[in-house]
Image (tube, one colour):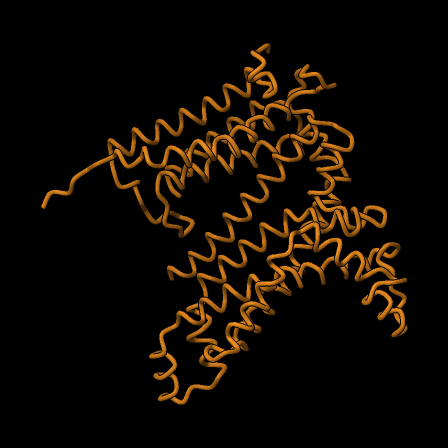
Length: 97
Length: 287
């Protein structure tokens, strides 16, 4: 991907740009959610932790990163299966943790 | 009474946000970009997908340096936390010796990391160093430049010397903050010194101990300068921790792609372990 000299050193690619775009969208989405329903949706989940929506997003993203790493290290580099697992995991975290 | 909602204060955070963006977020994004590409320099990159991640995760060299890093951190925490706590408990709480002790404790923290490495390099040399020569004179066959066990001993000792003070100062601050009423109540109940420590001091120190463990965990997990100056990762690769290995890959071999993948894995491990530590300790505190 070609860029101007100012950002060419950052070596942007479309997949990584999409990834960071997704993170940014998550943060904007969480801000909107917080604006619509203030208080962070705090609760005591199944892990025995007191979590807010932000905590649950953090746990989802961090856990998903490890799901991808485990898949890449142990299985192969095709990422559709870990993507599905990560989405299911994030759903579980947001529903019950 | 209606509470005034004024979100304009967020603009005051903007300079900090921009600063963090420039020194942390943009470099991190660049590392992520590097980690999925191959480069031969001159800002020319080609896509390589998650190949570097797979290579790193399946590499024996990475497993070995991660293992060494984990072992070093475990040893450091096992020594520095109890030792720091013990020294803090033994320090005077009032009188002229307080300042003397605090200054003495703060001294190692003021020395730059590369100077600490150089100092211990000379101090532990078997031919001319006070420690190295002294140990050999006592009959030990000590040579940290040739024997991995000796290199580990020296590095651990250096880190304990350099960083236990931080634990001491944190614990001391926590101890001084405990109100005298608790001790008076314990005295009236006839509590032993152990009971005072177990049921008053330790619970009150939980928060500072959490901070101390987290700081020492993160710092020791990222240790680089002192070890690089002292042993350079040797002898062989016996003290090549993850940070030193990463440096060799990134700047020694100039393999930016594999180094990027390694950095992200390293970062995720630190992030996850710090989160687990913090969550477990805060959870116990909530109970």
